[in-house]
Image 1 (cartoon, rainbow, N blue to C red):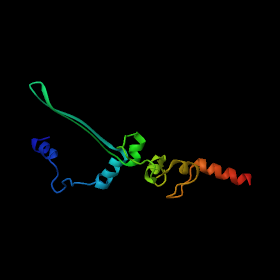
Image 2 (tube, rainbow, N blue to C red):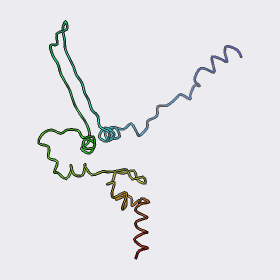
Image 3 (cartoon, rainbow, N blue to C red):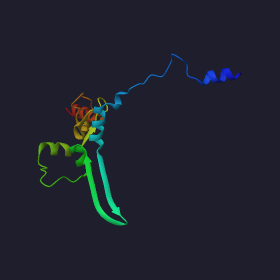
Image 4 (tube, rainbow, N blue to C red):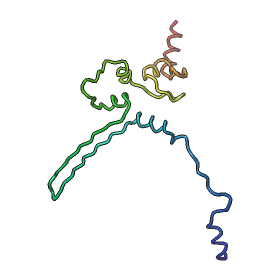
Length: 136
């Protein structure tokens, strides 16, 4: 193999340059949904010291999460937060993802009845349904 062939095989082919590709997973909507679903916690301790003497100390504690995520992980809320609201009760209800449509629904409804979005039924719900129809 000559030196010319080695150099040519290592260089990219002209006219077939790689084109940038974009996945739908990197959209702003996806990032926000992931942040709210998983949550983001920032803990920072900043100290300004001169010659070993601390002059300034700052503690930063911040959390970004949906109400549901915060309730699931037991994050503390500011005093005066009313936990009797409909939104709070909805967040406290256990939810799971429907295997058919991928949307969140109440866990007990998914297990015992059906998915309110697509109508999917779990094996447990189907066995209860067939058991009740045989008893009649």
